[in-house]
Image 1 (cartoon, rainbow, N blue to C red):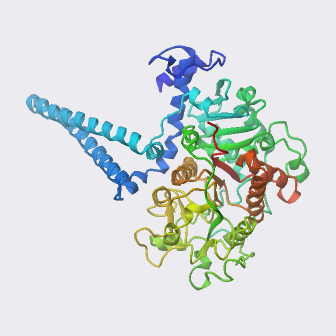
Image 2 (cartoon, one colour):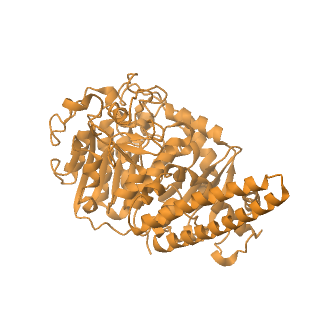
Image 3 (cartoon, rainbow, N blue to C red):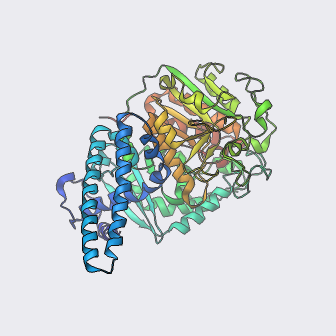
Length: 573
């Protein structure tokens, strides 16, 4: 950290210069451009922590298999445990009071520690060489500035926000150069600003468990959105790097801290006019979403790992999963109406939102899943998406009782689907008893079994799904959790789906009004079909621009929940 701060302080005294050769910097060099590159790399190590935490179970799940990767991962897991034990033995030996015992014990422990360290390094080299995608999933290495520039097009930029306890940093890179600056907002300041904005964006924000507190529909009773606060936040975060974004059409964004739970498009680029409660004033607001198509990345290195993807070779257009048998739709109430009918029950307001918490009402794991609020309006959304793609709702949906882990992971043609949509609850770690990683809710079995407990976790996605999808739509994700846990879930789910073979995710940041969700998702996909070369983020932006002009959807709570995470379009190379 000390050298990172030195690098920051030194680099900030120099203007951005031309890119330098990646091999042009000696270790510990104090050259300004080398310090800038080192600080950029250090910032990436810092922001990738959340994704690593959210994927903490991936190694264990891969080690449980019987293929070559599983055996290698199991060997590494065993070596890591043995090395930790050797480290502990060294500490114990060094604490012995008898000099001879201390010398003998510490010598033996050091020899064992050195041997295990060497074995671990050998295993890591094998993983890097034989299974590079797994290595990038579990321990991605940072990009240099030059590497990042090489992945960007002329009309693209990459920005990274590193949020700290005493202040924050913003980095901006395009193909011509890089800028960065210290921002006089610390983690608490940003959390307070984001909290202010989220209160009027998320209908469930701060209102307690969904099973006990009735909530109005997302389209009514919304608090006025504080556009002045959104403008202040824009000035603080974007003003230092505005010049680097000039003329760009698309921006890759790597947020951290509280910023990870706020779609950056809701920031306001000009001083707002009119009344925050007036739909016409909202429609005339200079939202950041008007200026840029934006794609979120868990880490900068995600762009490199996604570069392996070309266009999907899948032939079937769509597959949808949702409307699980939970809450009031569990048991005999499940599957009323069948897939193609829509099956929705449009009157159930508290049970028509996704990402809802019901903390504190559980007895057992499967019972906990089953007690989550039903989502009857997710089925009409999936039916609408299926029809928009020319798919057959009766054939191309897993809904109700059919929407189980077993049915999904045993499906033989997932790899042949270009778009896969999940319309269900997204849970963060610890939101259910024993849940240690993010998960999507499916229909639970009567009793939990190996591989099927009603929760499709990040590690199961990475291990058990084989995809070749251009889009995975998560009309579910929960990113509003305290202490950044929701952001970790987003990073973990995204990384897991990328490993499984998805190029991009369309993810909702808060509970979503069903009418808006259908308009956004179908509009984005229609825009993509009309102009595939524009990119997925631009297709989403076009859908949002259409929505925000209508009084019914002018509030950003309605048009802004979805963000594009992952690959905007295939990287040129």
